[in-house]
Length: 237
Image: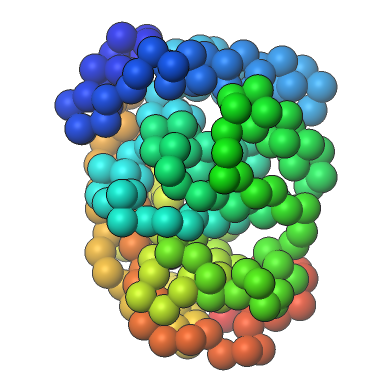
């Protein structure tokens, strides 16, 4: 996906990028590649692939979610900032919080935020299990995202405690989303969530399958969740 395709395809979805925003994405790409030589941020480093598989794929969340109605977004385990930083560039008024367990990635995100001149960004070096227990973060966010390979039952225990009642947990997945949800349905209900919808689309050009699983927070998460660090992954609900 070249720059012109990227701009045009987002325009078709109602997202118009200014020259300043396009410059921000270019700086994002350059910074990502530069830092990737020092630490493992991504296996994808070709410009056209980064724009398609990281930038466009991240922004796809906004095709099905009215970001203008979202004030606060928390991104759990975002790695190099996906999906929250591309969304922040497109929607500067969005306040984003990223929690990641690796301090090197937080250092990258701090540097990136300065390079992009972003405001309203907050980065925390923490495990999601302990972060979600903190009063200042628990059930405080309109939307919580996870673009991760962990199973839905695991992601739900890490993310749903951070979602405010009436808010949304968005899990960004590749294939087999329905099977993943079915396996996690009981855990999601236990944690205070209910399935809102699953949106499936094809990533342009390569036509690979993507799924967005939207879980609505309908009641508070029991205080015992999430369990101790490592437990959700070792012993999923």
